[in-house]
Image (cartoon, rainbow, N blue to C red; front, side, top):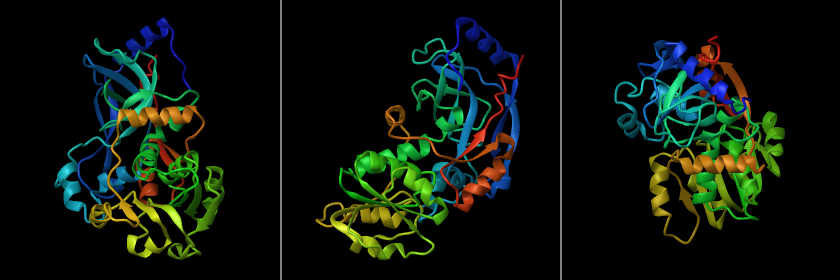
Length: 350
């Protein structure tokens, strides 16, 4: 990991930011398979008065990322998804949301960051070698001791896990939590957050991933290929589904009287159930979207530095192999995060 720069280093980094005029970005001009992804040369951006210029060292490919690339929003959400992201083609051509990198320039009015800071966060169009990011957006300094790849593996999964388990389901110590998809990009953080909150965790995953899930804090693991998950003995206080393999009707009998069925990838049905069960006395449904926000990112950093969360990387690909990375994520059998390592274009300038 890079450490903070000296004043001379700062001057050198600022010079390098202007020594290279062209960079590469990953774009998609239409919805479709991973083959729609392409590389585009474009000018290196400049920092506005309240922006930081970040040399991107790593980004990630998440479930949300492949769905936006494919225009496949699932669960009856196709129309809403297209309205938000673009009806016939992506409104945002440059792909990617999570990034980790180094600040190479700051705007005149920037107060939160300095040249040489290692930062991570989320922004639209993160898949470019250099990006301009407003200082007030979802970006903060990286947790101490992490590499760029480790830092970029955190935002999507960890913010989602904290939002759904701590804020919405309000998991308490001693409760029993079942995580379906426990070894995936969100599941690995759900297991860790639930354990940090004092819950007893059962993780549903393949047998090959059981050991990983146990090291993250699960007391029990279940192989979904050999066990009917809906027949597991309850009661569970919280059932979290990250992969859309459960339904409230089928799983309600295994929930405790005040149980919560949490759908990370819920559709219209789950959103309606969340409304209809909210005011009842029995188990209820929790669904929706975990929005990226700075407070959530800061909370993730604090949990990492407190030893309550650790990054989980399943595969790393060089930037040039982004298509292969998307294919792996779309197959839905990955462990943890899928990371793209960027070449550090400005760093390579002599």
